[in-house]
Length: 495
Image 1 (tube, helix red, strand yellow):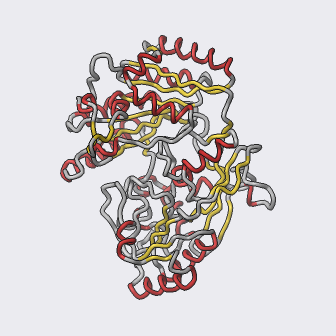
Image 2 (cartoon, rainbow, N blue to C red):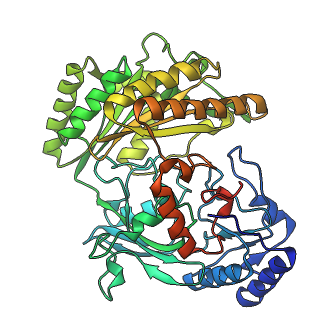
Image 3 (cartoon, helix red, strand yellow):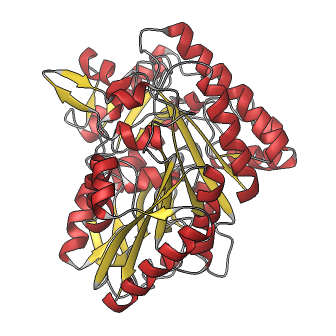
């Protein structure tokens, strides 16, 4: 899509004044301090300061913002919880930052159909607490409690129960730049409820997923929720190599044993012990070692499996996990051994799995968080792991952390690597980013790896053939003035 000319200062000032008149100064802010706070996130993406910030409180407010922005051709970047790590919500320079955090109502918890209808500002702590009062829970997530389920799920998260449901989105309410409001699932029919994603027409919720706010602004969504079962268990199996851990994970998943499981490398589960002491981060000494060589007595990988159901099934499932772990050369950790090897991991996983509470990561204090994420087929992810640990190990910036988990019953394996160069070492940060790009291309070409998300110009729509041309045509129809999140660069805009 051709880059459209950004509005001049006169149009920007007109849009700000009209929105202040319509919504009030409590919802429209253009003072310098507020603008600065919306200019960046924890990513290395350079800051871009918006001309003003809008905090809508309803779908009607969002309609007003988009209609006025569209009329004056002022770009709009949307955010919800503000827990952003990729630069995807950083606004265009002198554009509008639209923050949906005040739209934070839980509209309905439907325990009959198993969905929660929420606004985009609802965060995971808020939803999790409300669901527990009803005897339900959301999918297990690796995002912190302040993050929003809607923001995470629309960008295809690493959240869990993904071995059964790749997408937690059921039905959406969406606003287009011209003010059109439409729904995507069963709620398109009067009185039908929000319980069904697929109907007699094409799946538009899928179109909005991974569009990063460039095709429309989502103002309501129904999410899958799950009953809290009678009993649950956290099972931990240790392996000396990644290949065996993958085989174990795929085996138990294909035999319907866990609700969810993750492979954790030893560097990652040791960094769970990072804590603040005397105002400074304390880092366990093991986290500073070569990621390719775990210390004696530390398993190279630990697979955490969440088991839930009736108590009778828990006993049999634990026995199966022990049998299958031995089959692939591993072992199930006893409670005493687990507490000795990874005490912080036990505490965190207990909160995450058994108490259904999202975790607040402590390891961001290690440095600049830089992540690399792909999906691969099971046989290929084994090669990807070898490549990434070897190549990143050569950079000498431990810890090199990763985890992997199955999607859609193991048809695809999610693999996330991250490291923490010194935030002040710009040369090393750039070196890591360049290495990530080179290794993505290698993983794509040699192992069929697929990127999890689009990130600031990579991959481009020009790389994906006719798909890219079709998506550009859709964008031109839905957002002809290209005002929606143009700063991310998905449709050819410069980031």
